[in-house]
Length: 351
Image (tube, rainbow, N blue to C red; front, side):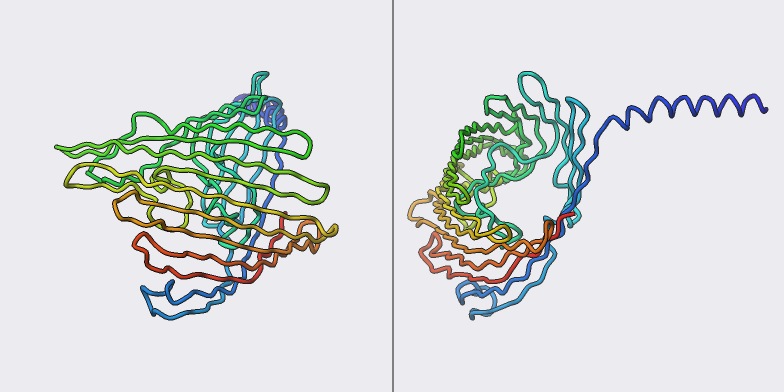
């Protein structure tokens, strides 16, 4: 009996001596960010037409859903990352393999068709992506990035089916690509994405295609910068874009069995500068126009303007006062949609 116990202990020790060095070879770097927003919001009477029909004002103090905790892991040519939000929700989880030709990424991360030029904090760090700047989110994908700036990915397709005939299928993944260039203080890039799905019943089928495209450029002048982005999309909501306003879905006509494509165009402009080691300033403007393509439909437009003054209270502590406005102009029937203004701050501690 004693011999069996000694043998078992020796076996366990041997296994641990093999396993521990393999685990210890990986470099784990944990991080977190706690974010709270405090904003006074003012809605026009048009924005409250479905409820009171009167202008309203409301103060909100909320934990932002993009508060997060995660880790970066490095083990030679292999690396990985995971990140959870406060919902709780899985934001990121992926592994990478760096080769001489480029980097292979497998998992869930920001897809190539995302563009970021803004630091707008209202709306859970909206970054004017809902009006004028492409935001296709974080999705499961297989991605390869070359050392020359080209990235291509096969992405999980969105299943926002306008026809909704009963069964929705995809024969291929969404395909996204980007190319980025940087030289000195100048950087620029272009992105594209496309996907299609089939909606079918026992007697009818229709194929819906959605595409997105955009570009961006940024120039830095010492402590200052200016950045521009633009987008063009067909059936943006069907693609899964984060977008303001309606009229961005394909429209299905059950009588003819045809789909009418919606179009969206927009741009964003951001400028900012460091004022000191602890304070900076940034302003941004974005404009988006959607059109359903249906006969007689008007443009459905939205514009955003914001101004912020980020303040660093300590190396990992920031407060970002910001004020702004959303002008929803008119909808596709030419009815006024009113506006929203806000003022407040985002509070953040990184750890």
